[in-house]
Image 1 (tube, rainbow, N blue to C red):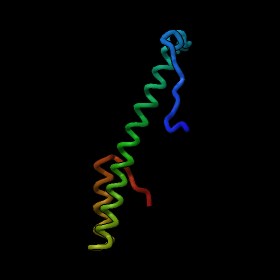
Image 2 (cartoon, rainbow, N blue to C red):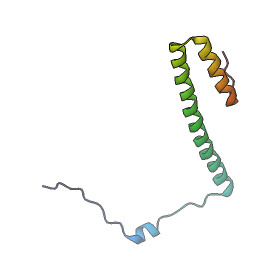
Image 3 (cartoon, one colour):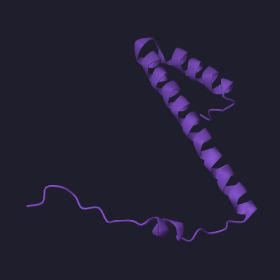
Length: 84
């Protein structure tokens, strides 16, 4: 009975002979921009989630008007407008 896993043998030449596409510079730049934008959006979404969580806590512990004011202030710091 086999208890382990079998790994296929990969020769160095197998790796060295893999074809790699040559991507034009403009497409590389576009890809880089999209990846950078993705990371920026991820950071922003985490920040917005923290604001939303704290806003809900404030609304339940204090009052809704103060919470909304605080949320709007935080969004202004991020240059984001909350449409109501």
